[in-house]
Amino acid sequence: MKLDRSSQLIKGIQQVSSPNFDDRPLGVDPEVIIIHAISLPPGIYGGNYIEALFCNTLNHQVHDYFAHLEGLRVSSHFLIRRNGSVVQFVPLDKRAWHAGVSQCLGRDRVNDFSIGIELEGCDEDRFEQGQYESLDMLIELLLQEYPKIDRTRIFGHSEIAPGRKTDPGPHFDWSRVR
Image (cartoon, rainbow, N blue to C red; front, side):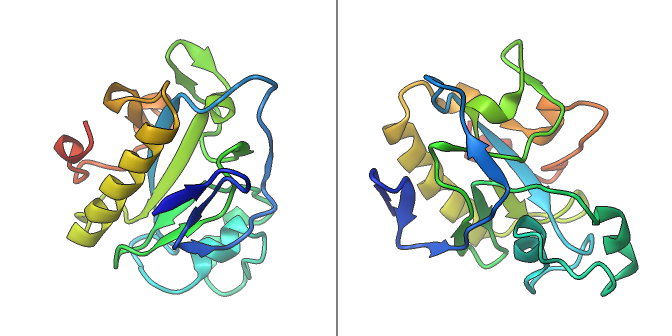
């Protein structure tokens, strides 16, 4: 993995452009990494439902669970699938819409200064070795590129939105990243 600084995309991984992003505030660079977990429908892996959600193309009639997602506009910078493959949805210099109402480092609007990484998974399941390996490589790259980020600035969605979010869940091995 290597960052193309002109496009702010990671070379060597799949690129899928999400329309759900905008500019970061002027002068604001990434300072934290937020780790999430997602599966659609919950507990079901594989398929293209996550990509479709992030690209506003999810067919909400395919599964009963999808009905409440209609109209939702979300994205993340990255998704790490169960097999360890990585997909990038949003350039790193742009603000992905992953954190929602949240607070980190005493600040609101966490999307402004964060990079969002989704792991395909849920609270009930352990993550795969290949996911941790890809996450490790991605974090190393981000640590090199963004001097404000260090291993103390990697948070779970549950830590920045307590009571509202539980991901990446109790089975995420924090010793792998902190």
